[in-house]
Image (cartoon, rainbow, N blue to C red; front, top):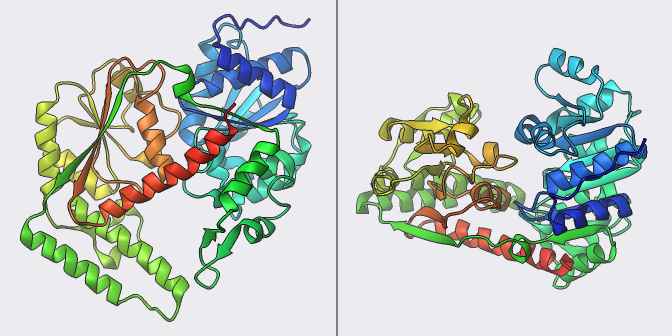
Length: 456
């Protein structure tokens, strides 16, 4: 018997997303954070399962999203609470037990996708695939993409979900579109895509867009008819958001040390091998960002995992400013950090700091019981709703990744937020941090062009 779909509590734009999935069968939803792309997709899944169009659905997601979002979101809605969802994460024994249960929807973290494909011997028992946060498949060279590419043709329904389709560069858009149309829109191969729209630089290392590359890519994606783009500002009445730069002057001696370290690093770059030079430059910038934050990993430990690295203290300018700001804020605050030594120094200076690894931390935060929550954007950028607990974010250090920047800010500035949101960035004056912020702004402009063109 066909189940009647109750969509009375869905917004019009969410019903539009549901219909888009059902009508297209193969599509991408580039939907702003807070517009409910998860419940829209679950609603479409519910319709397809109860009309017997599909029997089993595979959802591939970041680990935090796999563990904390899909099953919980389904349980919150009357028309999806009966979906049987199994979450396949953790050790081998736990994963094996999870896939042996009866389920309608299997949710697996992206790192375990190659294992799942190998487990089924490339013969997947699913009719529908959902790639949550498809931007995490932006690398054509990653194993997760290579394995997925071999089996994606077995799915009759394929849905890609993300709020940030081109978080860093348009170079990563090809591998997000390929599972939908096997390269029809952007090229059958990554090589063909890059040859058509990009110039190769640095003896094969790095790509730059051709003058008309971005415009032609936008046109191809729009012309595919497979993409629905929805922006929060078009549908939600949101409180204001303020981006505040807090400029910090390092002590004269400390800044002189910064300049000397930067100069020495530049002099060591080997200009005869541009690819190596580019990699070395990236490492140098990373080191200078550490310097700005107040500590630097010891060079002899560069090959070690971050948790075992030793570091040298440089200055406390940012730490002093953070402490000063926190003393003036009488509400919960999220502090985003970049390096492990940032967290260690913050925890030592600021009393009562919590981290995302603590038990029941999201619930306690949203109940307003966590004064200061330290987050690394890579571990908390996706799938965690934090809008109920506070409206202040302080970036102790800037990330290179636009996706991390947008997604973490979007954990607080999203539907359900009732207070004005203030995003404060601590920045050392006359340092590489200004270039990083410019890079983030530039990448955001590039992505905004794509989303604006697709929006209709």
